[in-house]
Image (cartoon, rainbow, N blue to C red; front, side, top):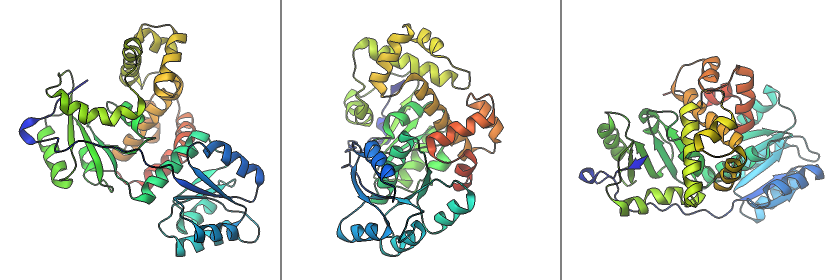
Length: 354
């Protein structure tokens, strides 16, 4: 995929700068020392972690220092999580609170969400899910911008989304959903696969007049290499894309194959054949390049695509499962929840289609 900067419309108005934010400060509140130790192991390298054993200790901590995110257990002595959450919403309304609960029943979760919880995670949690959720909450709490990826295709920009989402906030959407984006984007990437591109870019520029728009076209050469280096390269620099030729070519071929066949029952062998490498060799350089195993990448790619289908279509969960390569809706739902922490149905209800 090449990139073209449209000179006639001044698409790129200024360099794109995505500065990696300071690690968030996270207050973890749980009366169980084993849980606190586990949180320390999982989060220590990703944030500054502060620990509290109950709600009273948590409130005292919040009065003495600034915190970006709170992880809050619901069932604790002295002051339980519900009481603590009520107090936090009154005195620290802008601080996102993620509820930690071993009780996954709907009434408990609904009660916490009504009290103002930002999201919830059930114990035991998936480490990657928790880390991702903490970073998302911190970015939203800080009011940070992010990158807006706009395309009619639900799959074509998904690899760019996966490369960026741990470093910055990312929303991938069609033009209708993009125009209702609730944060101010640092950059907008639009894929030119539609005849409506001129109108789409114009509407995005009207909605976000100070945000640079980067237009990507299939099978085009770059018109302005300096613009590309100053813009799109900034978007992908976090993931150190510039590997040796073999690595770049093989990983690109593998990703392109996944994007083209995400709705098929993909195997590592098929992906390796598409990249013209052995399974072992590709597995090594793929993890080194992306930070994920091939299977994990396929899973995250499918979930990323499923999010858009849930937001932008009226397809049933069974249909979306089939469209994203899952043989049955139960497997799809379990996988989706393991990545996003909520079920596909809950995700759809929280985000109206458009």
